[in-house]
Length: 255
Length: 345
Image (cartoon, rainbow over all chains, first blue to last red; front, top):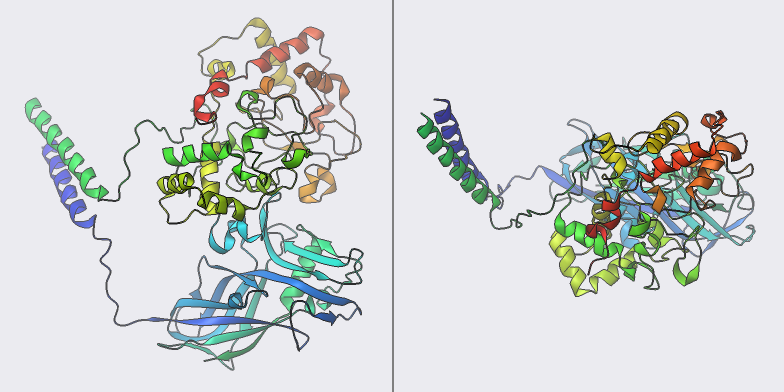
């Protein structure tokens, strides 16, 4: 009896497998979309003045600064829905590079229709992805945003020149994925007055302004003369990361 | 009944065969009968790297092996991983305190031996690298070693017809990526298992120690195993083992920036230790006897010195020889001569 049972099960399983194994190509056609898209645009400025790589600006410490690289990770984008469930842009990582116009606008799709009143994101990369080996895409070590000798992502890379610096340069490579010098910066913006409406056929945009003066004059002000080179996690790296993050503000939402 | 059972068994087997045929569809890979994959030795602790996102295959392993021996990874096309990691030296740099990278430049620490890396929670003498898959990024990009960018390596690989087909066979992706490069190297490195030393056979009850080796083992267990623990002879900690009073190389503290970590270096596995001279992070000792002498009477005091080294050893000359005799039992000639890990033809 037992054998007959096993036999029957095996037979049934075989048929089951036969009919389910090779139909990967058939996907249900969705005529009623329930998700839409939006974009986030990052616009850099220096205390309200247009920001350009290669232009010279002056800090509160009366130092001249001229950026030639502004590059950073944005990840963990979340939005609060006024009625339905919150949206999480899972497992998505973006590099924003001031030298690459296309990278300043993040396109995000598969967002459930709805009205969202709060957006949050991380400047940096969560600790899990820092300890999980070789990654692809924006997290590929080929993007030069990864420390090879002290494993971890460089969350923010700011480089430029200043006559206040002993060697004429400043190079701030900011990171630190865990521990007391953790340097991810979590940002959240309320969109109460202009809510983000994800609806069919629309491509709304969240516009975020980034004040590059904050790097030096934020909540932990410092002088380039005192600090021109940071290439690993440290308290100072954390401070500058928070200075930089403090410069991110929601400007407006285009629906 | 038994006849029925046999027929039922036969039908079952037949159906199972059909099942396998039917589930594989047309994109199936040929089944590799001779490739063992990752087979952790039963007397080893739980591995740290279990190839979760990088299942090993014969093609992936062989590709990793080819890459390991290929100087294409360096800027000058002259330095391969194997230039500084030679099999006969337990994949350390035989006889050299510091290794030569591109343009004859010297590195700053002794080339680490490579065996059982799937058990390492971190890499390098300072433990700065946290994952086997990203380990090769350091030597490839280090200006003193291979001085190449990952993206250039990928460009060079893409330009090679042979590599294009080898990557395709290993990963079945339209493009070669740096992730595949690192996955292949991790497959090769992760499958480099050394588990057949006399010590292993002794642990498994398949070999007997000589009297001298027994004495050496007892002394080793008394004085060394608080750090050189278990079948891999390491607890993977970082220790200041009393080499210096002033640290020209701050070791672990270069990663943590903590004063308490100054002068600390990784406790290495002692597997194949007789083959991987010279010893210590800077290769300052040439022989195992020099190493034993250091721990017996040469330990220098400093604020970060490992507590374990406050113990008086008072070894006699024959004790020292016995410890060395025990250390020689850690040599795994199967591993050192295994053609699976040698330069491919």
